[in-house]
Length: 114
Length: 115
Image (tube, rainbow over all chains, first blue to last red; front, side, top):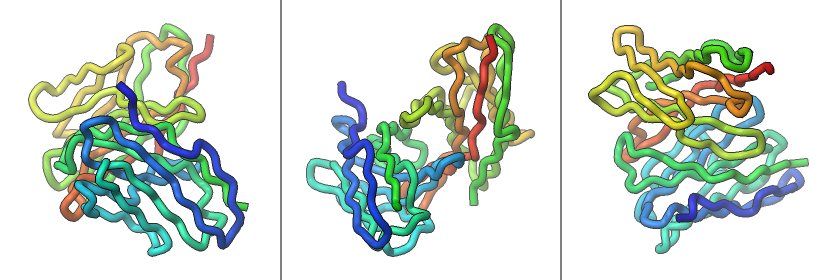
């Protein structure tokens, strides 16, 4: 079975631009979470979606938004990019949004903002 | 609020030696605890998960971790290091966030294995 897939693999943008990152969960998983991993740090939680509804939001500005589609895939959007948004963006899927459900991660999208 | 502390951002061992990576957590409720491994330029791979019950958890690739409630610790061990174990290791605790479930990660420990 395919794992979590993310696209694109790498992305280079300039300050002020907008970016859309995409994620497809493991088949049968209904929840998708997004994390930001800055170089040299642990991942930081951005959003969780379950059945197309936002179930959790981390401490990120409103420039960050996301949505989940009927097929459970998800998009993360970042507006007005800043240099500090350069990071590896990880998507994780889980069967549900329940406390303790194991999250399985994709390979990530490496975003570089110049 | 939950937090995770990984002591030692870098750990170096010789091939065949014991691996010990330390993790301490704070949680207001009985936690779910995880160890993930990240190889260069890759995502996170689940090594093992603690739920409830047995305090010694066995994972993949010969790793195991022991949950000690009194010490709020969840240290990761492997009896004999292999060169292929060189990677970044992250300890994480599952926390309730609004109606959902989020992972709070430690800062990571980079494991280096010397031949």
